[in-house]
Image 1 (cartoon, rainbow, N blue to C red):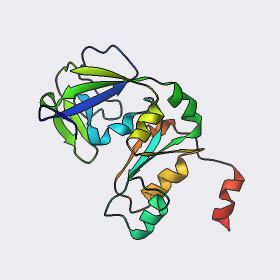
Image 2: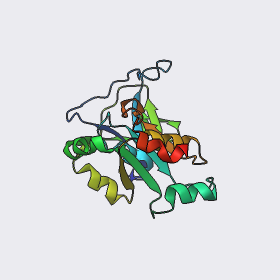
Image 3: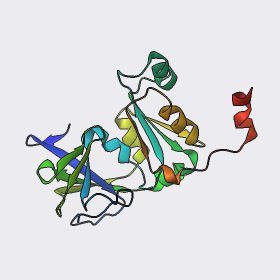
Image 4: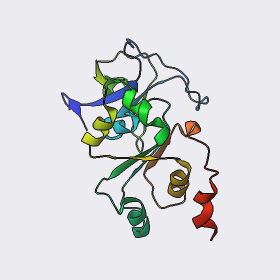
Length: 190
């Protein structure tokens, strides 16, 4: 974990360059929660090196996976983290500039340790902001494998029906519809 003066640093990623204050708000997909400001820890920050609406499936190697699933999902890579996005997002990823807002942990409380989510119930000013371009390079610099696929549904379904226990599925409502190409079903129906 990255720290500054012994304190944990947290981040918020945005395509907006000029946010001076982060004001708590209700998250659309969690209307039962109070208004909060969201931040992510260093270990999970790479999950957000993408345009906001980009659907992605992120999965990490863990000791709890079966041997078969470790071979199936990690057999051809040395990476411990794999992020898959759809081909249709390639150009958007290449053209997007993000801004990494940096916070100190004292304004936040841990919300979900597994995912690295922190929340603040009060307005927070960032300690710093860093411009991020060449997002694919930033992912690669961390030793994370970035994969492109025509459609995320097969991977998402495989992950959900496996022993992979350390995964995130982000903005999946923006994924392309499942493929209707009969050639994709050939191998499954025989």
